[in-house]
Length: 195
Image (cartoon, rainbow, N blue to C red):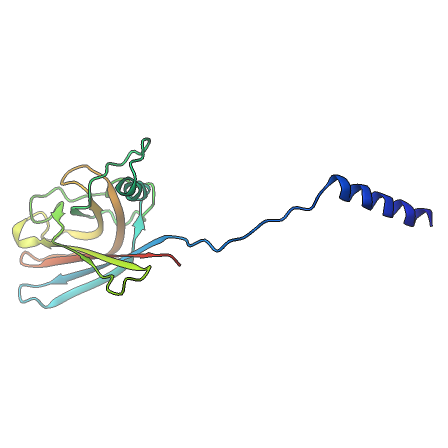
């Protein structure tokens, strides 16, 4: 009986000095960015020679760039310039990583290969939903730049400057080797979703 009385007394004093806590859980929408890349090699007749698809790795600088485009962040290392160029390289043996700021082995080239200008930016949100898909694309022309021809291209990145700048995303893929008359179409698809 003594044990029972002691237990009741301890329980009462514990409750008196330790009020219960509650944690309220509200449904809060999250925001997510996912992406993938399509790489299509075509010959001079426009026929598909090779096709690659891979997931994106959005970099830390890319996430900062998103923040900068939304709100000026005083301690950000990224600029707020929009995405404008694509770069390709031969360093695909190094896996994509969020800390990377440049391609592993970019092809040093002229107008047709290195830092090709984005030719299309399309907003595919047609139903005014909370989900948004944006595609950006560029074409690498081996005929316009000898540095691209015969290069085993296996990495690509998207940047906000013609030189330097911030790399928003990088991806790697099985290498494609361009003939002198081939083109390489690179299309990024970014899905913005609240689920």
